[in-house]
Length: 153
Image (cartoon, rainbow, N blue to C red; front, side, top):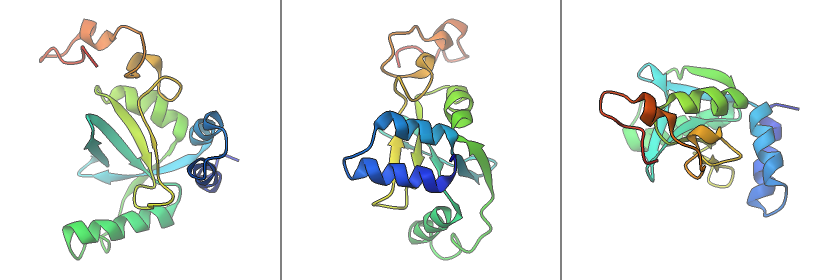
């Protein structure tokens, strides 16, 4: 499968209380996910101390997000051309999330109240080295950055 429709179907199963959570993560890993750009970078939002990459299963879900942005930002948000990148979910989870340098996860179809799903930065979803619940030393603290950030996720 590996398409956005299959991911949307797996999300619907989990939201209905059925389906295997591991199969849902596997479907995300196989799916092509649309991630809009925001000021040159990927569109993200911060909530609960986590940076969420906003991804969409298809252009319709992205369009609903654009329409929801109109309510927040006024006319023009939905009408503007929305540039986006297409990522395989595995690349988002294994490469993009770890490169963010902070706890990060993927929020899929955030404008669809009955079809959204969060994939938090936990073991089994993101690499153990960046999972907030892993019992793995944070190598960012060892390699450090100018502010000494990275320790104590």
